Image (tube, rainbow, N blue to C red):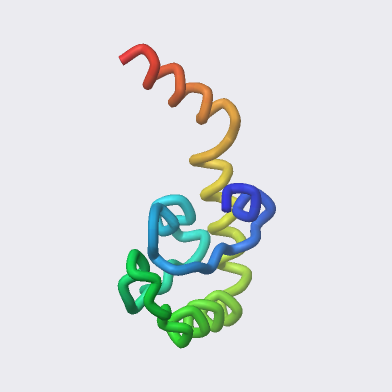
Length: 88
């Protein structure tokens, strides 16, 4: 996901795990619509809707994806956060 964001590629996926936290405004986390822990069939229409939303606003999502990567995942920022975590 981070690699996609870094080149301005919006991320689309189901809102499971940390997807929404990672992509932020650089993509769309569609509701799964079922219990993924029980391997129930997801809501495909929600994913299609998310894809349409991104395609209709491609430039804005692309810019947000790139900006998210630069603000949150640049090497210097990641190193600072790791050092901070280790020193706590």
